[in-house]
Length: 469
Image (cartoon, rainbow, N blue to C red; front, top):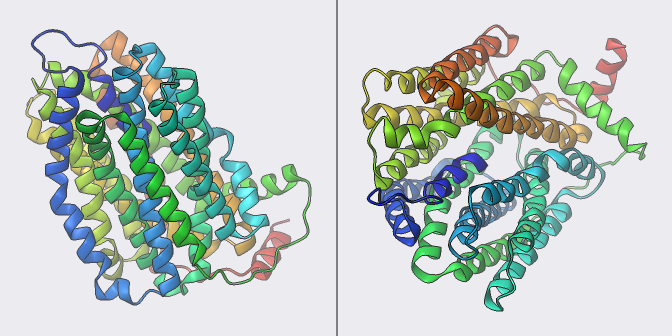
């Protein structure tokens, strides 16, 4: 996600004459192109929210879903606006924006596991509301700093870091809260609803953030983001979270080790984690080199690059909209395998552009890279919620987020291989990486699941741990 946003901002860091990649004009052109490409899908998302399947979900869950939409939109608008503000308002260069992106990425690596531990130790609703309030305050502080002329790159990085800490806690706690709000058979529909909110925000947030900065100025973008975070807090306050038994606290390292051991020793969750780790390397390898490749090899303008990248968000929305129906018609394990296989096909299609340099193939690749893997996210989230005891859900969700640590690795591989051998070699390497992740999941027992596993209770899990020992 962060590299995807970074590719949008990197285009206007250096602006050779005649390329059209400059300043606010670039923001407007790319923002409008992406926004126009996605308005129809946002309308479809609204229809989905009112569909009969969604209406069957409890009202307290619907508050969580709308809170998730507000929170995710706030995140995407702020993440898109931050590097644009750094370049246009503070006049920083490429190296400094790289440091900003690092500050916006580090919380996922540093605080995911502690967030998981907190999620299992306290009320998940209260934890999420507090985290979202923290993000709202950080975004409001950026707004005030811009208004009073106090904003500097270190201050922007610090406040952005704090805001993303709120994002990490929300992202870890939300999947752990969902099973307590809906029944086991409603988990796929509930997770599809959660992911749909995320994909709509992901698809429209960067474009909206760019348009707000380009047309109105930097401050309104962060003001809108802060307001959306505040709305998410209000919605969370109305959620009824059923009481649950919280075990006696032990040493934090012991509890963290317990969560990691559960994932790494589980015959279904281990291959899912490995697959996701490899997938992140491959996807961010492609994203790291696509913009210069598209400009030089595919002869795309700023608008063309923005529209092509927007197909990723379009694919995500389409996949989320279709997820519930797909999971009803296909075996549960088949849906799990669809994402990695589709990712491999997407990598092959992108590699074909080295032979047939057309933006249509690149757009199709990004569409597939969005549509297939979103089915993976929904199905594997449902799998984790089903096979993980409630007392471990927070830590298991956190271990899952740690797979995002592969993203900087993918970007680094892209920088090294692309710098030495060129972007084309990176695309061929991506085919091999995506092929590896597809093989891992296809050789695992997860794809053989005929249906969603039965929910595991804490007592059942304890018994299984004793047997394993």
